[in-house]
Amino acid sequence: MKIVFMGTPDFSVPVLDALAAAGHDVIAAYTQPPRPGGRRGRELVPSPVQRRAEAVGIPVRSPVSLRGPDAQADLAALDADVGVVAAYGLILPQAILDMPRLGCLNVHASLLPRWRGAAPIQRAILAGDAETGVAIMQMAAGLDTGPVRLEARTFVGGKTAGDLTHELASLGAAAMVEVLRNPDAHPPVPQSDDGVTYAAKIDKAELRIDFTHTGEQIDRQIYAMNPPGAFFEYKGERVRVLVADWDKGDGQPGLVLNDHLTIACRKDVVTPVRVQRAGRGEMSVPELLRGFPIPAGTRL
Image (cartoon, rainbow, N blue to C red; front, side, top):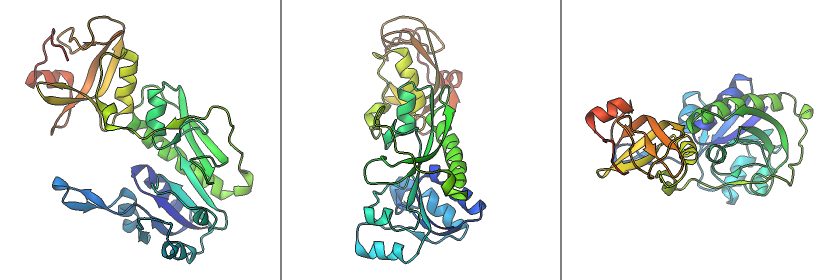
């Protein structure tokens, strides 16, 4: 098929690769424009999709909007069979959704209608969902409301948001290739009106660990916010907690209980396992404590 691909972050790249590997003709890759980054934010950094598309010779387009007549005329001229969308980051007007012969298909990282919206992976972990997955959705007006053609499932337990992002990108890529191989075998099925939840965008304030929450809640937060990593502060420095253990125990919330950095919560305790100081690489807790002691009795 002649495919217009639309995506931006790392999550999108396996889908793009799978389309090309399956023999489809990806005639253009639409992605978000380069953003300030690099050293002190002085460089414009292209998206992962732009870098990958350019590396394999796929033409790249980065409009700031698809609502204007010029942008829509440019896309219409491509005469695509289908649009494939994976975490693009722009709202597609109805005119765009209707333009390809088979419409636009989206790789969404949840089992719809649960977790419609911007941060389905993190919200699934925070909520303690036992399983999640990907849905290949026929795009329609509304926030992730379109009918679903195919889904794939996986377990959540013990995985960080980074782990799940990588896994779901691979599952979504395979599912999209399967739908495109024989669209008639995967007709669109309307989503249920029951069980709808919304995955709001992650706010920076949600990265700060509040030890007046329960150990279970903090454990979920640590896994859901990795990357970039939930954090606590000690002596004016942020310490990001990337992996932790949660266990039974008690103490005043925020109190360091032993020399292994076990920390009391409102209920139960958490013990960081992998951490990161500002400007430094990931390290174990013993490595942290050798250079940055946080003694028992400290209140975080």
